Image (cartoon, rainbow, N blue to C red; front, side):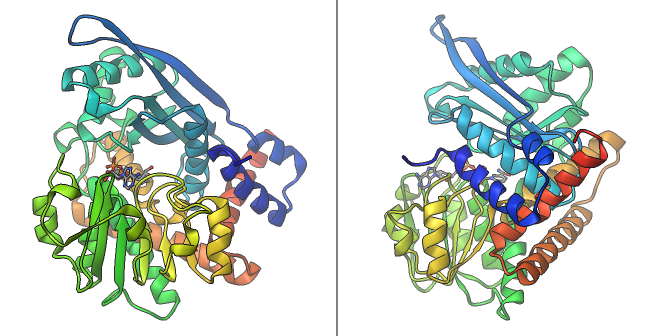
Amino acid sequence: MASTFSESVNRYVDRAADLLELEEVVRVLLADPYRQIDVQVPIHADDGSVHTFRGYRVQHNGARGPFKGGLRYHPDTDLDEVRALASLMTWKSALLDLPFGGAKGGMTLDPSSLSLRELEAATRSFTHAISGVIGPHADILAPDVNTDARVMGWIMDAYSSQAGWSPAVVTGKPLELEGVPGRLEATGRGVVSIAVSTLTALGQTLTGRRVAIQGFGNVGRHVARFAAEQGAVIVGVSDVSGGRHRTEGIDVPALLADAGPGVLLKEVTVGDFITNDELLGLECDVLVPAALENAIDGGNASAVRAPLVLEAANHPITPEADAVLRDAGVTVVPDILANAGGVTGSYFEWTANLTAFRWSEERFNQELTTFLDRAFQSVWACHLERRVDLRTAAYMVGLAKVAEAVRLRGLA
Ligand code: NAD
């Protein structure tokens, strides 16, 4: 039977724990989440009827600080998915040496089937349902799939109406509501920064490299923009409707102008149409899956032709596909490193909110590069010293820090 998402993540954790020779008591404490919440989220629909959704918040491990993690809205979201994503946040925050534990939230809903008023009502209802366990020093939310700055503003308002002014309960907020310049772009900027570090370590540059990107949401569109600005040739991009392709390189500013919010790539005219399957098999130097988990699995992994894959999405490659790519000599930069610009930017926003000091965008971007490069260097050093792939190295670095915090707090 195929593994669930959280079982797949646990396989990576177990491999790193074996290599670190973690003592049994620490392994037991890290094996399952600290807290899992599964709540009913009722709203009054526009037609006057009462509608309910399921909402989840999983707080995986808080040994290193308050829980931290995004909130996604998707019809397929369930508790297992949120549990897996919460675990990834624990290792990612530790790898970046941020003072956070790991958490994730989600609601099983299709936002495109709701009016704006219904979406706001569901967000407020969910926030009230979990308000007892979140807070600036308890658990801090952020945007993820199908949630954005506006949703974060509603969360801040709903929470603050109970607890008093609390911008630090959520990051990725609108700039007018104590968001910080740079956060919106931080995940995509970080992916490109890690791409540059990886290529440099491999003796290459991003300039002239052919890049294909699956997913054209907040992460994917910023990867396209920043990679193109650094001289990469964007040969393909895709979203849920399909994608656009041009061997000589897509005009990214023109594409970004055409494919604004709510516009699907099948509707724009820049480049030629391709399917998502074709995009994953494009002839390119760097493939960036930036959509959803399990996009590359045992069935399509052998179609990947890129020698370098950066996991901009969380868990876009199943363990079976990971093995296929490794055997084919493909370098995979794991999610907990490649997309860590998001939580790092959230850390800067949280810091700015707690100190009520405004960061400039220049300082934000400088610190982002510094944090990401430091994490990359620690992973690369572990990869060379222990002769393990980059994913195993990243888990080893993150896991070692969490394990030490668990020991020092006397929990073990
Ligand atoms: P988003 O909702 O803004 O965009 C998702 C994109 O994926 C959209 O373009 C959508 O059309 C596309 N998509 C959905 N299903 C698809 C499919 N089957 N095939 C191809 N494309 C498909 O979400 P996002 O915030 O850009 O997040 C994308 C990924 O990055 C997720 O895995 C998320 O967990 C991860 N991530 C996001 C952030 C962040 O700051 N937003 C941070 C770290 C990691």
